[in-house]
Image (tube, helix red, strand yellow):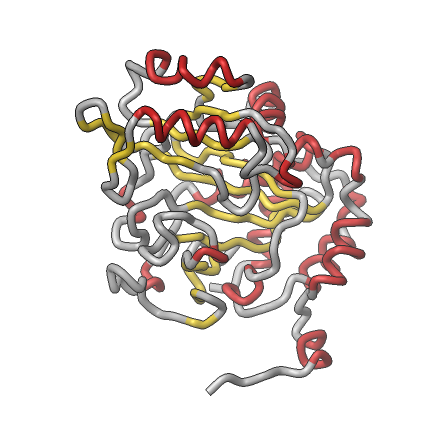
Length: 316
């Protein structure tokens, strides 16, 4: 049976609602002129590379329609790759190719598409079908991340990622987003992926949700989600924290993937991260925001901010 909780009870637990997020966290900390640095994934990648922050390798950019038919010969030496809109959101328009079958291109589900399908996807991306506001866009082609074995059994037909909320440079809350058959291999909670809260102090799983409801095992593999432990955890936190200096955004979501060979990589950044992360962790953001506000004027380094967060926000 569903149980409902009163607004006063939510405030008592420090839960941040949509209005508070928009007014207190986003409007007060994220000047609008800084949005393009994260809303445009191509700009984010260029900024990250200039700042020495690890990101997946950019293979190429399709900027105009005449580039579309150059894709296949351009990618002849790349057995796998990812095509994504620079201004997309919510995982829309991301096409992952995991291999080749003859002249076809294999998707994570095993479906094989042909050259014309690839061209159509790129052309639709340029026309803005997947971009914020439907504006014309460009299609980025990135190397495919070879995700670490540690996620074996915690994900299904897709690449899992980590979402870390960074407030004034301090990592304050995290969750792993684990793809499922229901999400079609996408690590997006709105499309049916699992969200597993991750303890900031130790990098271990806390709680997990799917479609807003608590779960204990991955719905496809049945592996207990409580067994999930994130490797290179401190490096993940440092990577997320360093995005504060790169973007100047006081409130952001850093999405990180773990490559088996390269370690943690920043996949993209978000100036308006969602709030489901609170459900996956079992507590609210506000107490952590308040604690960071009490020390934010000390101009701590990235390492000092990470040490502070691990000490103050660890639960296990």
